[in-house]
Amino acid sequence: MTTPEPTEQVRVPPPLYPQVHVESVDELLEWIRTVDVETFQSGRYIAVVSLLRTVGKTIVPSFDIPGVESFGMTVLQDDVLPMGRTAISYAYLAPSGERLFVSVSTLTSDQVEQGSRSICEYAATLDEAWHDAMLSEATIQIITEDGIRTETVQTLTYSASDNPDMVGWIPSKSIMFLVGDFQIMLRQDRDVFNADFLNLLQLEVISIELDTTTPPSSPESPGIAWPEDLPRHVPGSITLRPDGYLEAMFDLPFTLRHRAVFYSIPADIERMVDDPEASIWVDENILREADPTVMPLAAFIQRFNIQKEDFVAVVEEMRKNAIASGFDLYDEDFELPNADIIFTFDNELISHFYRRA
Image 1 (cartoon, rainbow, N blue to C red):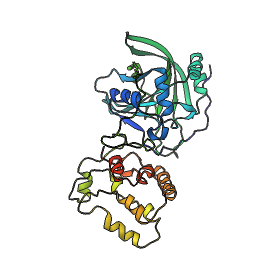
Image 2 (spheres, rainbow, N blue to C red; image 1 turned 90 degrees about the vertical axis):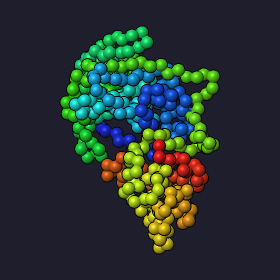
Image 3 (tube, rainbow, N blue to C red; image 1 turned 135 degrees about the vertical axis):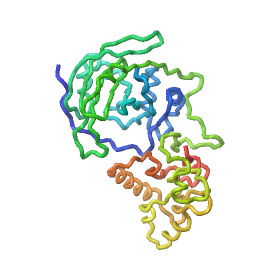
């Protein structure tokens, strides 16, 4: 039995929308059951959610280790992983301080068939960079409604890409295996994988029960008729600064109701206007004596007649530069303005989208 040959690393640019981040399994299941995949984030989650609903179940990992803490789950968008795979990523912190990541990918029927023959045959179809791949076996605990059972699975241990030029590159070791309709991958940010974590891994199979009486739909924003073609802000998808942090930094006499990007006019956007009055306008309209009711950037765009396509092009360059510099675009400090939201020039929609949540 041979291991997959290394293939060229494919870099998928981060999406313009933030990925869905949830704190609990109940919140995750509710989102899968109810999200309107056709309109949410312009369809960025059609494949992952539709496949989960078709399979009718998912797998939730945990570790039989006292003191292991979960710090959230992230549902990856359809275009994040190559070869059409979908995944939910679970993050844990061990008592020793080590970070553990477990990715659960839902497989198509073709992928299940490949995996039933050999983990290598399945892995060879993935567009990944394989290094130091090694086959082995492991016994996994699987929790179902009928109780706990054990299952012996083929495992593939490998190193991540050894290209330190990639932004955010960290040496890591991963273990991958298949269980039924799912690919499970464990990763540690270290050169050698601690096998104890694999031995103490538990996988719970959870049903996704859809309400068949009405089609799944995304809950409306309270009191706002939210347009179906607009993205929605998912609470928790942006890492916020602590309450009062920005107020203290800028010595503000009021409490901010919105995320930092709401109050900012980036220099790249300001430079789009070849008019000395632009800088004067910015100085006069950024964070004065009260929390503004109108987003300053939206007002700036209207005042100086900036076209949406030009705005989108500049923001895209800002995104590329931020990624190249290693900035986290889902951190409040580096969140980029959303053209679709801002160019509605609807103060109520803009305010709700950029609320601190």
